[in-house]
Length: 291
Image (cartoon, rainbow, N blue to C red):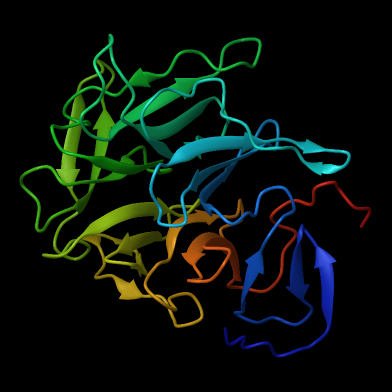
């Protein structure tokens, strides 16, 4: 991997190596206890507890399962299934900003019948802080097809991928919003974002100023305009290296991006950090170091 570092002075801060001068480097993030020979991807940090939720699958990116690790005095704990885990494959965890809800996708059984495709589910925190039983989002949010990567935006819409009929290609980016009566509206993001190919993963920025889209194996960027979302542009080669970049996550500031890439080596899928606007103390240290 080629790094575009403008300084060789490095400090350890925020759980990752941070370049002391502003750069647009992409750097591996391999926390002990999380990184393994399996494929790790789709990280999400619990805003309330700091726990790390992520997806682990086979090196061939099959058999997805959501795992959670807690930061202890000795580092990240051994990853375990979360309390809401079900049967089937499950992936794409994501928290609302207040930590009250967690979205994910699952083929779990419903009333003893195994799910036939990936649907969007949501778990809510109970008063004691534990997770309640997840609920499947209703139609028309879910469809007879597969849904992917549910991500709520600050504009009140829930963004996700779906291969339902009515799109521009195999899988498109859609968004859904409910009214006061609980009725859902679903709409396609349009031809500026979607193509005749596949678009799977939409990630709105924390401030709503842009959105990262994973499409056909690369990460793109689009911005909201008065006429809708702008035509997407591909992120640079420091991010898109071999077409396997997936599961992007913004830092709370929106200045940095954590994503996974298949390195095609013995460690298979690994996490990478893009400090787009210079270093920041993110992801968090575990265990926390004195600054």
